[in-house]
Length: 231
Ligand code: ADP
Ligand code: ADP
Image (cartoon, rainbow, N blue to C red):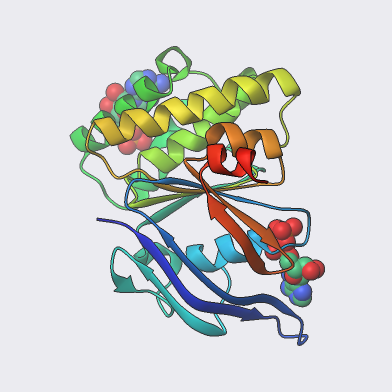
């Protein structure tokens, strides 16, 4: 059970700028929710608050029913995928995937099982021995997603993960990430996802529901079909 609930969430930056104005939102357990809106609407601020990378200056955030306002990122059960997915250049794909688990002293057999399972879900078993410089942009982005999957987080957070890819790869990755979400859910694994993008197509094709933001305020939360019918 890993719903994400925001109640009256606010963000005032130290310079006094209020970026988020009392946001109420319930992301359901297992749901794929997209935050969309123009640059500066506070998509990233909201995501970073869920991640624990940015403090919450008003209201309450719950993940899986637990109040997390004051919990550090590591204790929130989240994994985040960024646009700039710096992989470790001197490590193979396998070791890039395994790195966080090694730090967490995950037993070797379990580590190996998790790495292989993530590689299988992302169809990159044949890439495990490669180094990052031997990967295409799309392959590298899959490794970045894989690093999130091996953590088995309750919630996946994506911050414009595809914006550095060319149009063709972006389209392919949209399908791949949507299928990944479905596979995780069908396998009974936690799959709650918040996906931030400024790209309307990405929002409409990937989101089960879409939260439209403008200047730190929610304008609409609805399914793609409903938004398409009354935009
Ligand atoms: P988006 O992700 O939708 O492009 P952001 O969340 O990055 O928007 O930013 C939302 C608003 O908050 C913008 O007006 C931005 O200029 C402002 N902002 C972002 N970070 C800071 C900061 N550290 N200090 C002050 N204002 C900020
Ligand atoms: P350590 O640094 O703890 O010695 P390694 O990185 O050498 O660990 O490997 C840990 C385990 O992961 C090994 O048992 C190995 O079978 C497996 N492994 C490492 N790299 C690969 C790879 N490229 N492909 C498949 N399995 C790998």
